[in-house]
Image 1 (cartoon, one colour):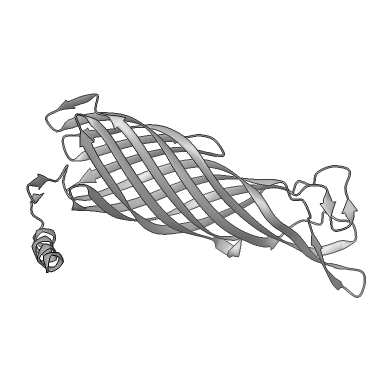
Image 2 (cartoon, rainbow, N blue to C red; image 1 turned 120 degrees about the vertical axis):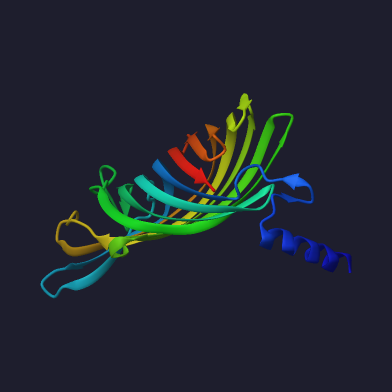
Length: 263
């Protein structure tokens, strides 16, 4: 009965959009829209790599597996639009959508089936465009100017031409301090750590890199599960405009700039 009573009390607060919930004021205007630019370099491990091609006059199809693929590197430029809403003073939910340009570099190692090459095989860079969409939630609080937050985002990435289909889950924790606060203005630098889990499969045509084998197509599978540190600054201007600058480093190096407006 207590749970039902609590829900009956909470629903009108959310639906009517009151300025506070149980006396707790919202930290800023509840709706927000922002644009974000991200430049990211991501390193991961190849869990599987192979080539399918044709050989000889009869065009017999062959499948070649790289037994010890080493790594891959993805450089991406991303543009994102985000819409968010404070459902509670300490909880924000959001949806994102955008596009990206990526360049992928592969190091496939020396062992191809029973054949061992003299040196690692590195394929020419593969360039592709795509779109992304997803959403997430953020829980945050402040005490004596000490700010902390936890954030989770799920993103789906689809590259043009079926070059790659990828899902990413990112959890981020931040701890900061409000170094300046005046009427409608605040500056909060922070330290953070992010956990990212990425699964990706890629396929497409490649140049003839093996003598006698033509019409080759690659097939790669990748996973990345890393914790990366980050630093950043969050600024509020006139209670309506927000600026976030975030830099993470390690196996996933990212520079993100977010410009927002709240209403």
